[in-house]
Amino acid sequence: MPTDYYGVLGVAPGASDAEIKRAYRRLARDLHPDVNPEPGAKERFQEVTRAYEALTDPEKRRIVDLGGDPMSNGGGPGPAGGAFVGFQDIMDAFFGGATARGPRSRTRAGRDALIPVELEMDETVFGTTKEITVDTAILCTACSGAGTAPGTHPATCATCSGRGEVQSVQRGLLGQVVTSRSCPTCGGTGQVIPDPCPQCGGDGRVRSRRTIPVKIPAGVEDGMRIRLTGHGEVGPGGGPAGDLYVEVHERPHAVFTRDGEDLHCRVTLPMTAAALGTTLTLKTLDGETDLDIRAGTQSGSVITLRAQGAPRLRATGRGNLLVHVEVQTPTRLDPEQEKLLRELASLRGEDQPESHREAQGGLFSRVRDVFNNGR
Ligand SMILES: [Zn+2]
Ligand SMILES: [Zn+2]
Image (cartoon, rainbow, N blue to C red; front, side, top):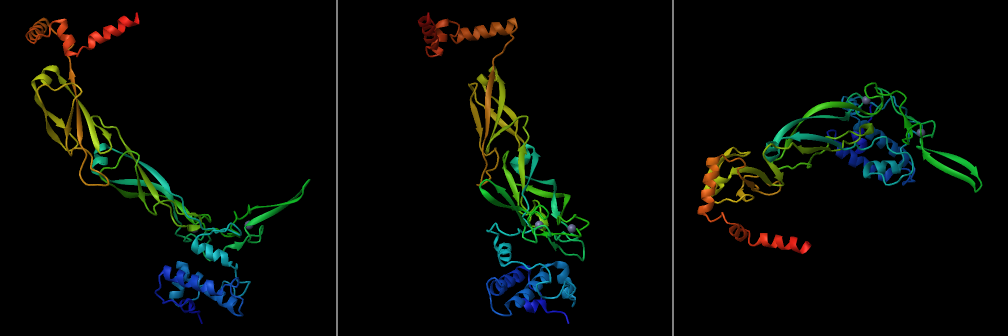
């Protein structure tokens, strides 16, 4: 008659993995021979451990639910029936191991993965969804992370007898020195896999290239990282996956540069347009906009277009677009143009050296003083 594994753990047949885990943790704390010397506790503990193993392995649980017994050919109860899991190992498995002694778990958490993504400025400013190709380790579907070939089990490591570490004794001038190190045969896990899963070779995970859509929020900046929880590498032995970080690399834009939420660009104007004023059509990231240049605009002045910058990532609203104006002085004048400019200069009284001095607030005379003192 098959064992009622749900009954042994005191959970309902439809119990979730978390409920099974919780029930087993409670029972293991009460019954483990390391903490409970009462007669019968050890047998009870082995019974609940077998039930836990049967219900946490998806394949075994399926057999249980079909009315079978997946543990019936795995050896009877008692010390000979497979590896005896230490109390500390169970507690470590549930609470995250704090002790360094003894064999460590074959299952370890996966690493985070980092993938750079190149984005145009309109994508970082307005946000987008990018298909990103990720090449990371995923859980092996053939063994569900166990690393064993179907129908086989891990065996106790013969080199370290399951302790996970080996000791060597050296004799020196100071006497006998005993050093212990991680077992080279099993990598410190105390177990070996005699028949590795053919799909993953015993690692419990396989490399897989897949494409996932990543939402890029509006307003991200160069160098920022977007975290996708649980999309990183699956750990050895099918351990929980790390996170995937997508690092934003913003391509330089032909016109705009970015300073956080503000955008900057430069326009060059003929001297005459700066003096007389004009209206330009400026192509922004949003589209075309009119840019009013007031009469008498100076080179180096900045025109601010409010809320035409990048959206604020952690607040509402947008930054500004700052247009830096550069006034161009004509370099080649034909005789006619030169004549006109000289007339203009004369009309404005700008053709005398004294007027230059006044216009510069006395700078020229000060410069001359510096030169004279230097001699
Ligand atoms: Zn596998
Ligand atoms: Zn070993």
